[in-house]
Image (cartoon, rainbow, N blue to C red; front, top):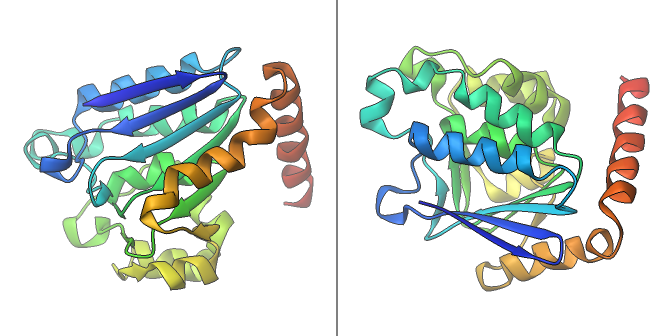
Amino acid sequence: MIDLQKDNGVWIVTLNRPEKANSLTKAMLEDLAQIAMSAAGDARVLIFTGKGNVFSAGADLDEARAGLAVDDVWERLSNAVSAAPCLTIAALNGTLAGGAFGMALACDIRIAVPEAKFFYPVMKLGFLPQPSDPRRMAGLIGPARTKMILMSGQRILSDEALRWGLVDRLVARDALVETALELADDARSQSAEHVAEMKQMISETRSISA
């Protein structure tokens, strides 16, 4: 249910459970976290995308009822993506919902198809988001808009997500992966060490600004 393709320093990770809207089981989350952690020293670019018309609907419903919704595996995944010393790109092939926000928010760049919608209905469901998600979201779109998503349960359309800065570019579906690969071109031509150093410099600049 998680496909991994490696090509000259570019790793493409595909959620492959379209019949279930790419909802995530604990096993899938563990696999994703392991891939992100394994990227150090090898991958220069790590791209996340999905099969079908939904990037991910969040937690698998059956497993969510059994406790997955509050499992720390979500936080381990997003922190592994954030810590990956390579360029990380979320190529969102459709709607992003619930806990699946974590890995997308942790990426360096987010591109999405125009049909994508964004919602995180934790307030309605009586859960708290994973600890790093509100911080990362507020860093991108500000606290008021973060509250609109997390506390008011608003569904955000792609054009509004672009204006807010939740995504960085809207791309036609048939050009989504190609665009992600174009964004990867410069990084894939350099060593993993060079990419890691560049990313660290940008992270340090952001910390100083904050």
